[in-house]
Image (tube, rainbow, N blue to C red; front, side, top):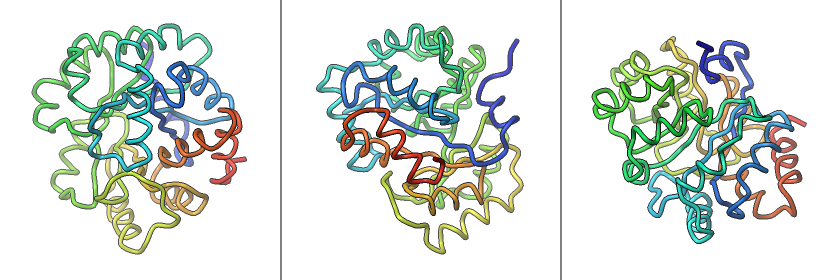
Length: 260
């Protein structure tokens, strides 16, 4: 059995990991595979593919708008899986599906896991999945398909809870930089830095990535300083909207965080 690609990545690369999020079906219905190939080509370490949903409560206005547009474009989970049919021909970086519980439950969780495994998806992030449901019903199914369910922690999450999450998950922990929604920020203020340092001091078993608010060199470097790396979403979606093509958007993103 080969090791899950998420685990492999974190075993091989201890810091400066860059994970990029985009919404499937945005800017066009058929952008998904082009975006994945371009992100890999320009050296992104891991990608989170967002499943568009009509009520994405953890997301800020940029990702919400991209989700709305993707749904207008006719994007669905079924369509996404058909687009990802042969994605492992030429793509070898870890891929994670990120989506809310509602569309995944409508699809059927077992079906979802099976289709993920068949296409070589490595894990999932379901922000509104209650931890108890994860432990009792979701984890056993995901484990059968060797899929990682990545959990989020925020500055509001108690230390006891963080330790519990660390003990019962595998892959990495998604450290949300603030208790608010997603969106680009120019710097992380003192309270966030203190939170990052506190988590660092807990010596968790799982590696961590910082997400929400990373948009430039300063925020990315802060994330890399206190964790294994950072996750960028809103800024990339803005660039996909502003730039003439995917290649330019990816290039500009990497330039902004000092990776080019």
